[in-house]
Every structure is written in C-alpha cells, then in structure tokens.
Length: 188
Image (tube, rainbow, N blue to C red; front, side, top):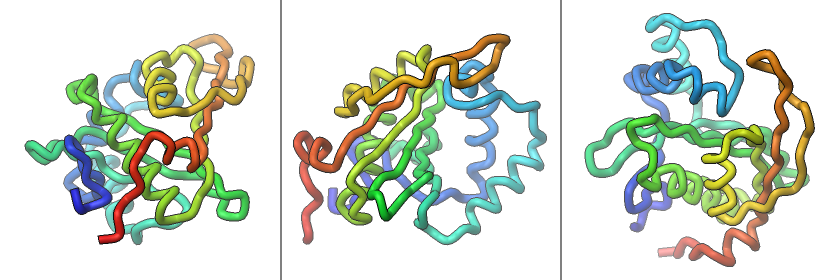
C-alpha cells in the first residue's frame, strides 16, 4: 500500500464522533477491560458521546494520541491503538492496543501495532517502544513477543485489583530490532 496508515487488513484513522459506540462496546466487557486497565463504574451513552467527540476534536499527533483501527473490508470499528508517555529526549514511547472481541484472531492487533511502530520509528525518530502487560494477559504477551519485543523486566505485585496484587511485565523493542524484520516505508 502507498498509505503508511493502511495495512493489508486494517487501517488506522483519527477518532470520529460516531465512534462512541465502538468505544462503549470495548468498555462493556469487564474481563477485557481488566486485561488492559482498571475497571471503572459503567458510563452512560452520553458520557461516551462527549468523551469521543472531545477526542475527535483534538489536533492530530503530539506526544500522546489515540487512533481507531478500522477493518478495510467493511470499514468496521475493530479497536484502538494508543501512543503515550513519549520522551523525545530519550527517544522512547509507550503503546497499547485494544481489539474488540468480534474482531480478534484475525491479525488486526499485529498489523495495527506494526503500523504505529513504523510511524513512530520512521517519521518521529523514536528509538524504542515500551509496553506494560499484566502477567496474566497471555494473549498480549504473545502478541508483543511475536512482534519482536523482548521482556525487559517484571514489576512484582505492582497493581491491585480483584482482591489481589498482580505483576506487570515490561517489554521493549528498538527501532533497529523492528527494522530487522520489517521493511522501511518507501519515499515515493
């Protein structure tokens, strides 16, 4: 593809106000939310509309942003990818991915993460991407290992929820490691 935001299966795009239903659906499954974050009380549809409209109105890029992963075949909302905690001086950033249950197992998370890594390494000159994954989240650990991330450490009993403490696994990938297995974007 000639668009760096488009893969074979998914494309990344900015958040639109009408995406509120997709974000609401991601938040409805407390097991999925727990795998990625802390569970919050239920929100109203209006709250999701306001939250999504506010994000849709933000300027693109910056040191922290969120994009929608959209299925190319039918333009369906498949999930979201985020970039945050970017440190341009040190050359590192964090990313995260969330794919809805009905779109899992199709390679969308892999492709969306590859697109974000390519953008951040090739266009923004970052040198390293870091992720933090709960130790019990085997699916996310497998995704990042498949993408070439190396386990860099473990924060023991780092988060508390569901009545107990949980470990967080730290993973990272450098630009050189990413380019060793992926083609750099062309300048045409």
